[in-house]
Image 1 (tube, protein in one colour):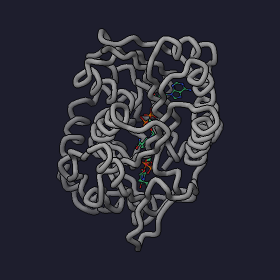
Image 2 (image 1 turned 90 degrees about the vertical axis):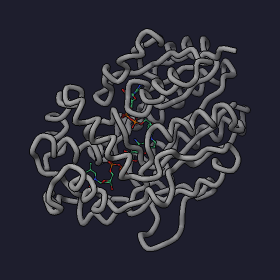
Image 3 (image 1 turned 120 degrees about the vertical axis):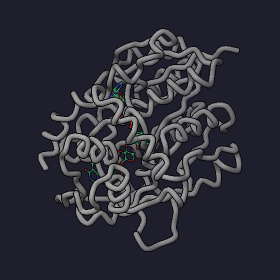
Image 4 (image 1 turned 180 degrees about the horizontal axis):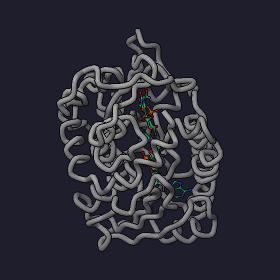
Length: 332
Ligand code: NAD
Ligand code: TDX
């Protein structure tokens, strides 16, 4: 049976990879994408699938538009978001607008038409873990967001939890660790360093680079979202992450990128640290593995990085127009 799926934020990094994966592997879905085409979107992200989808340019905060689009679909997957922590430290406004008010506006329409929602949250809602510990985030870890970005994502999760409990909203939420892969905006850590090296600029490491992230390939994240859509239990939350072997301090990831791109190991600049910088993220994915049978395909960051570096080398025209403005925003 064909299901009509509304994919919000489908012209951004994770959303567009989700659209490509859905076209490739899930012919049961008839796809509509809605995206506000902010600085983070790229029309080239949907190259090759334009004929298989309906595309609407619009804001998830627009109640009339959401009412119309939600009424015409069976399922909504919300990838629309302001996603970059550094931007949220400079100006939280768009984060409150999209990540909080946008979700509220979606909830109103989804409740009205009794549609199924899957919301894409982040492991940053839990705050951070100490560097020296075996602790990992689970679905019952208390929320303790650090940045304005994480606070707006946490707030949206709270709204959804209340709508599930009080109004019986049919929703699932997933919290994924750091993603990487093709079509990621050059503001983020991995593509920023790769594209700096490709342009002959020095990569930039915040502080001492001791902060640990768990790098999850975007295709694995999206396969998990599909597993939740088909087998997940309404009202539940699911943590997604590639696991212990994909965890690494930023300095080590920097070293790996330099090595894979044939650069000396010290060919980077240490720059001012991020305010409130979370130390360590690490996920416990027992629930999604045991209940839904999901497994990451990319457990080695090295293999994923080889492919990702190749993608940025082969697609200079895609990212080159974003680069200057992004670096001007950083100013370091
Ligand atoms: P992105 O910044 O690359 O893309 C976001 C997309 O949302 C863009 O296309 C943008 O135009 C669109 N958008 C922004 N505001 C909108 C609005 N008001 N209405 C409609 N569209 C709007 O982000 P991403 O990295 O693809 O992240 C997608 C989602 O996944 C975000 O909600 C983010 O919080 C979450 N997430 C990201 C990561 C990661 O590592 N990137 C990890 C876990 C969760
Ligand atoms: O130039 C840089 N140098 C650097 O050392 C940049 C841009 C980042 N960093 C550090 C900061 C982080 O410790 O690298 C790490 C990763 O940074 P980001 O790519 O900005 O990701 P992060 O802040 O960890 O958040 C990401 O993962 C969780 C996504 O951007 C979020 O949307 C997601 O929720």
